[in-house]
Length: 372
Image (cartoon, rainbow, N blue to C red; front, top):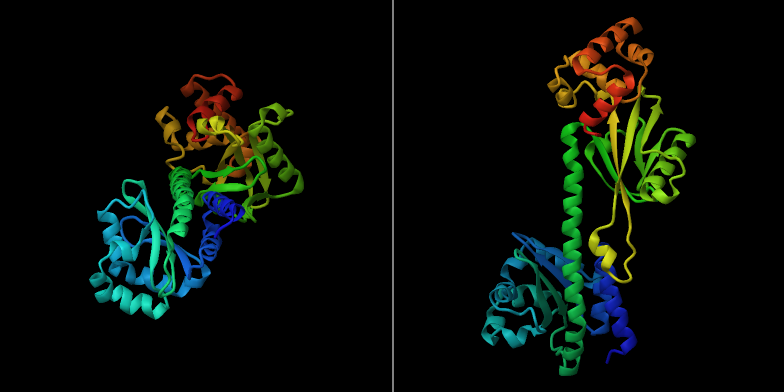
């Protein structure tokens, strides 16, 4: 019989792994051991082959199951037809003896794996998703009524944890999809915690490796210790404005690969409203870093907004370089033209856009480029 201490430990296990699915395997192992089972499995059924998390005892069986046998599992079709979401189920109580006796799933799969009866619970966190947690037992094992009662008490928390895990996975997938959407604008993006560790990044950010910014051990790394400290201070300051201490939200990072710096802008991402109302949940912030590589400034999509204001492609490129903080002399060097040509072009840009000073042009460019 499970002690109260062990029961609470199991509850803690499942709520912990709901935040990090990598630990489901160990939690399922503990779950199985506490009930003297041969192993435990969690299936997530969507549209097609299920995702499967299994305790270490059942790794070989899980491989065969996901490759083929899930299609022959009579419990899958039964559970999806009948509402089993509010109670513990045992296969020999819900399937007929004839079904079990003639089923290839039981005779050609479970029997050869040394498995017999199965008990579990099904939950439906989303309209198109079923999550099933099951305890696999050796032939002849029966879950006694008292154990079924305790199983039922525990499985309530398991069901909630599974639903929470599915929701977190969906939110993370949405987050990564939104971050990846910036690829079409040739804009590198990284979502980071206040301590600088990376939550998500897009292909453009990862492509900057060797060009002034790279990802190492889950953190952003830039060239030179002074620039590294400046980036970390900017991230910390944006995440916590109370300790910003003069740090801004824009940083220009020099690099050996190009005379044009990387322009990094940080945007604060506040905690979700729900976090502010959940007792015991610490509200956390993140910082969205938007990074423009001056080497890619010639891309037509990058300048579409500026060209829409009446600038030629050459003028749009020069205006974007001004927006990145380059001086006329630096622009001349990067474009291979004279500084006088740059100043003449700038005058034409001023006239078209109705601005009189370089600072006004910087503000205008800043508003129209993807970093605005």
